[in-house]
Amino acid sequence: MKFLKTLKIQANNDGVSTGLNRLKSKGEKIESYSPVDGKLIATVTGADAKSYEAVIQKAQSAFAEWRNWPAPKRGEIVRQIGEALRKNKQDLGQLVSYEMGKSLQEGLGEVQEMIDICDFAVGLSRQLHGLTMHSERPGHRMYEQYHPLGIVGVISAFNFPVAVWSWNAALAWVCGDVCVWKPSEKTPLCAIACQNIIQPVLKKNNVPEGVSNIIIGGRNVGEWMSADTHIPLVSATGSTRMGKAVGAAIGQRLGRSLLELGGNNAIIITEHADLDIALIAAAFGAVGTAGQRCTSTRRLIIHEKIYNTFKDKLVHAYGQLKIGNPLQQKNHVGPLIDRDAVKLYLDSIEKCKAEGGKFIVEGGVLKGKAFASGCYVKPCIAEAKNSFAIVQHETFAPILYLMKYKTLDEAIAMQNGVPQGLSSAIMTNNMRQAEQFLSQVGSDCGIANVNIGTSGAEIGGAFGGEKETGGGRESGSDAWKVYMRRQTNTINYTDKLPLAQGITFDL
Image (spheres, rainbow, N blue to C red):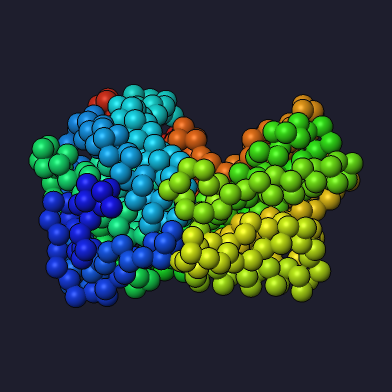
């Protein structure tokens, strides 16, 4: 495939890099198979302990230099990286689609997110503001400032194999940090492609070797990062199970963690909703990326007056879905990431049925030449109760649960009644309902939307959630502060030393 050649993906790739240099290692051999057609794309040699240590040492030495570059100059590097991504958008989008399985439009959209966060970071590089405040001591001035933190470890998931890295890296770089990236072992080629794309920028600008590092590998590499005291901040995106393990290890050494974990997102569809808008939001939210977004819509909480009407509209819409090769834009739904994901999908269906769930659109695995990878499944819909154990669990697959409600208070309680707290939405043209949903007694999620679905992220706003979603925030707003250390400064510009709180200390 042409895009593999353009992105310099080899049949066998070194999975450890400090920027321009690739490091030889004796780590595990990782084979990347496409869920689109089941074919082997390429192999990657993962990191071993020796190459990992070499990367960390190089990152440390790079940080000592990089932090002294003026922030706007660091921003200029990120601007050029954004331009490089623009030039390679089509090819990288195709690789994302082919290696991960999401539709080409979604793959291109993910690369656009990378471009957008670079633009955001460029502006941010001139706005790393602190505060100035009055001191209680006469003749004193106080202010706060932010300094680079050091090495930022980034652990990303397969479902957004490039965007999540860029959300962290672009901000970390303009803040003066260096990055060590462990991508998902399910999508290693996307990481290698990103490193290949930015290498000319690093070389042209004499960026210190070790500012952008990749260490591809399995769980052991993530464990090394979590336990490594040389890495003050680890940003980890993935399952709640993974996040608890990472958070515990980092907490043990009193390091910092930015956790972006699972979602179990619901849309409340009120009796005052525009059902046409609600239908689009619900359908795309549930089946986009084959239900493998952390913001995917898992639950629809529908007012009893419109329940049957909306259910019929939804079933009709599902009947029109086209499932197949995601590189063909006529198709709405591509494959799950691998056959393990298919097994979890099938297990979840059976668990739902065992608890009393009634499927109004049946699931199943698609067979035939066009589905040879064994990763294509049918998006399905079940009538269920919020209390079902399987409903309380996030299944990374296109399974949608429907439930009724009578009052908005009841609906909000159901929306909030899961361990996760990432994204939420309400469909209503009633201002009182919308405002209640957004109030302190409304959604308990990090993201709460009105008349748009749960899926998708805006670069300008901080992205993340509460409860078992982890509490971390990535991307926009003031999320940059997590990548820096905060310092309070007090300056005495007099020839006296008055003490705080009026304390006297005469000698």
